[in-house]
Image (cartoon, rainbow, N blue to C red):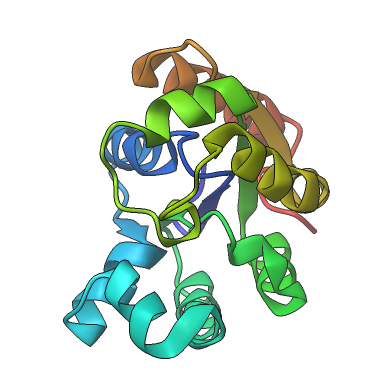
Length: 182
């Protein structure tokens, strides 16, 4: 893989984007950036607070600005928020500026992972977590699949195994001269 290659991770909340991204970046000796963490760093408040004060519309605008900026970098591993694919502009930047890896996971796995106490505004106060996650996936799954150059299933798998599969697949793409989209 060339030093100017970008790897962008997309997928639903609970798919492992941050954990996989950090490990992948470490293995490739590339910087890791998480869009949500970067928004929090720049605003000085957490994502739920942004949702509370600016609503989802305000958050999505911040997200579009961050995605546009970060995807223009060279040689990074970027983990996006679960809803980043909702904006056509984001999908375009991701698809054109790097290799997009969709971390696919089942509804059941997502529900199990997000119940671990993580604070997620789109799930706050939801009585039926499975129904809400299903609703989000019905909207987003086609967008994840459509933007992805590579799809890797994460259900029941440990982070190192997912990273190994990504690296194998990227190596095969690179061998065919297709690590980055043309």
